[in-house]
Image 1 (cartoon, rainbow, N blue to C red):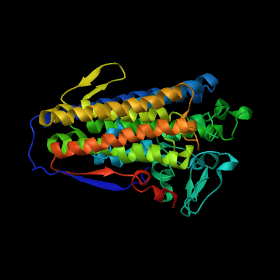
Image 2 (image 1 turned 90 degrees about the vertical axis):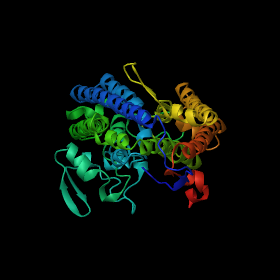
Image 3 (image 1 turned 30 degrees about the vertical axis):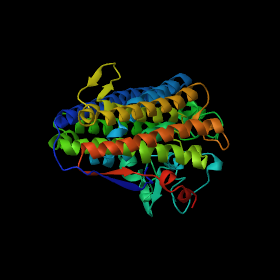
Image 4 (image 1 turned 180 degrees about the horizontal axis):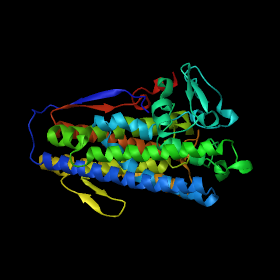
Length: 417
């Protein structure tokens, strides 16, 4: 979900190719292939756990599916650094990781959620409860909930970005349900009985809820299969960066800068803190936001250092931006290495605090000084990291790059208008 401004960083060097660029972008493509490959593996494991939940609903199978979802987020979040600089990824990303979402489009919600609005007439459509739905005046047969229905009819229906029907967060909602705890500790508490059949079904329409969850899971797997193919040998994303290594380096820096600044520091962190709003959490149903933030930072670190640890423990490693920058400006390379290490460490502090019981919801609470300090220290580290990335742009590329911005960072007063 994007609510961003764009800043332009111009480099002042002549367009010349540096030795090592081809090797650097080849390793970048290898890391992308491995990262999306791991995301696919974990999505397939999630799909198997969801199939077990639907076939055998119980506290155990629901917990297993939730555990698989959290595990699936680890490699996927490390892939987000491939956004922004690669149009193939950006055009696709909304299918798998769009947020925040109006979950009433999908399933039942608490009465406090409200109803349809002028901004989103479909905010409480509840497709699970309705085999026939109406979108933009057209009657739609939703008797069978299929991947095609989710992807082609419901996702961003009425051109409203909050109508998210696919991807990790739709699945997250169907596993956890709404988090009704506000800025108190606690995640969503959906019961496994929402997937039972017959008189034991809670929430109504348990069979259709199972259909929806199954369709969303299958769609996630197929979407990730598509992206793995793009980065594999002969894939369009790989061939694009290899065809022009200088442009590939620009894509790398663009992805690092945009994720670091506007997307993570701004939209995912400072905005939620300014609004004291847990609905602005990235993984708001599961309270897994601390991990999503951390692994986004790790993904930036991976691209800069040219190495990625796969889920099976093997290491993908090769020539890196760090190496390339060190060959041109060793002092600047040292500065960027320190900045990237520091931001990961600060995001790690949030992760450690959450795992010790101080949840991200609580950190967002109005007047919670400890939470504000944790979040803003990480935000400041990400902003500082971006400034060093900007300096690296001037050394490594003659291109102009567009770094995503955020009102929360660039024009805070606009957030409340």
